[in-house]
Structures are given as C-alpha cells and as structure tokens.
Length: 122
Length: 122
DNA sequence: GGCATATTCAACCAAATGGTTGACGATTAT
DNA sequence: ATAATCGTCAACCATTTGGTTGAATATGCC
Image (cartoon, rainbow over all chains, first blue to last red; front, side, top):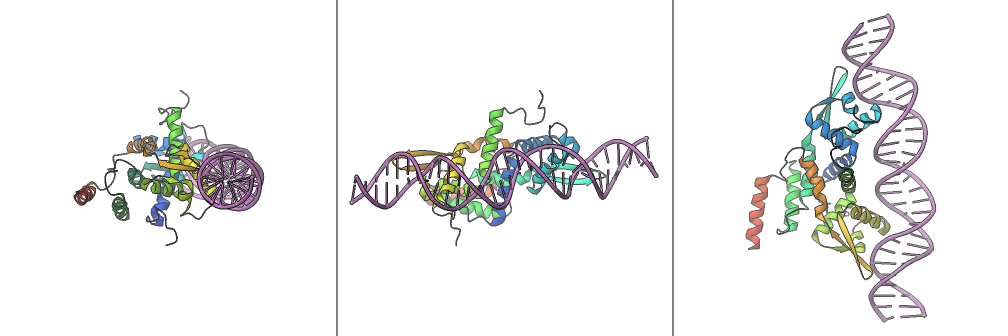
C-alpha cells in the first residue's frame, strides 16, 4: 500500500465527495444560497436577485453546488428550479463527528466502524 | 441592511470562521493530517513522513489548519508539536445541523458498536 | 566550535477559483 | 413574427492555492 496514511482507508470516491462538498461550503455566497433554498425551491434568477454579482456568476455557483450534490436542478419550461439536497451533507457530517466526543472508545475500532458505515452509502 | 440575504444574520466573524474551516477541510492532505492527529500529538517532521510532498508543503498545510483553529502548534525545543483542536469544528457542525438533523451515523449500529467497545474495555 | 536536525521563509510556478462581459439557444409573451 | 425573459457558454482577467526549490534560522549534540 503506497498511500499509507490515515484516511487512505476511505475509498477515492468518498475522498472526492468530501473534497467537493467541503469546497462548495467554503464560499459564503454558496452557503447563503443553500440557506435561501432551505426556505423554498427557487429559480436561478430569483436565487441571484439579492446578490451583487452577475447572473453568470450565480449560475457557476449553482453548478458547483450541483456537482457537490448539495442541490439539484430541474428545468421546467424556461425556468430552472433549484432544490436543496441536504442529504449530501451527511458524508461531511459523519466525517466531522469522528473528531468529537468519542475519546473514551477505541479509536482504531471506531475508524473501522466509520469506514463500514460510509461504505454502506449511509 | 444592504446585504439582505439568508446568512447575513451571521456576523462577519462567523462567516469568516466558516470560510476558513470549510476551506481547510476541503483538502484531502489536510483531512488526513487531522486524522493522524486524532491518534496522537505529532511533530511536523513526523506529520510529513507518510506524504509524498515536501516538508515545506506540509508546513504550509499546518499553517492553514492552525489559522482555521483546527490544530494548535507549540514549539518545545527545536521541535514544534501539533495538537488537534476538535472544538474548532463546532461552528461548522452547528451550521450544517441547520439543514436537517442527520444523526452522526446509523445510531443503532453505533450503539451496538459502543456496547462492544465498552464490554471489551471492561 | 562545528555539525546535524527541525522548521520556516522567499521566490517562483502551474492550475484552480471567482468574477466580468457579450453572444447565444430556448422558451414564453405580445 | 417579433420581442422579452431565462439561463448558459466562452473568453478573458486577477487572485488564490498547492506545490517546488534553495537559503535561512533555531536548537540540540559531540
């Protein structure tokens, strides 16, 4: 095993998912968009309305959120509806919980447990 | 209020904290480093050992993790010790929980795991 | 003192990121 | 048919990012 460091137990897909999700969340505009979609599905133009940047820029942000799986986009007529997909946050959440309140237990075993959980696509 | 969009309720500090934490987590090398530090505090050189990139690159990664508050570094003698600071994940975790309550992992399975762990330990 | 070890700094580089503008295809309205 | 609206695309730009190398700065060891 060449890449023998912690985290290499995750398969490449999981690593990539975490990459794209965390990167998507690292931008305040994108986080604001997600918050907006928490209240309701929205058309691209309406998403863009409160921001001071171009529609094209918003379109790019929505593309990044879509690629990360955090939203889905469905075109109905000439308007494209954006819908929050909060389940995409799950992998990131699971990863982060590994750093929390679990001191007392055997960490190696816990990591193996986590890997099984993630492999199950939970 | 000029910037009237969801998320503008957070003050600038919170936004910046989320920016830096999520950005820090978006890199697989940095996530691997955090996982390593979960097991024990480490010196910079030892952190670098399993990776195929230069020590200077690792030093930069550690600087980013430090700026995000995810680790702390204390120089003792000529070696600088890196220590995980998992509390820095809290703001990010709280933000994410706003999008639905994903339990950390499959809770039943997790509890079974915990029981096994505790039995083994006793 | 002199040498090895630990870590950072500085300069540089290629690629990615977040933004712009103007043109364009698709759909709806007049 | 023509015009307006919705959204993306393409080209471009400045800045950031993740990496390199070589020199510099501590600190510890003989």
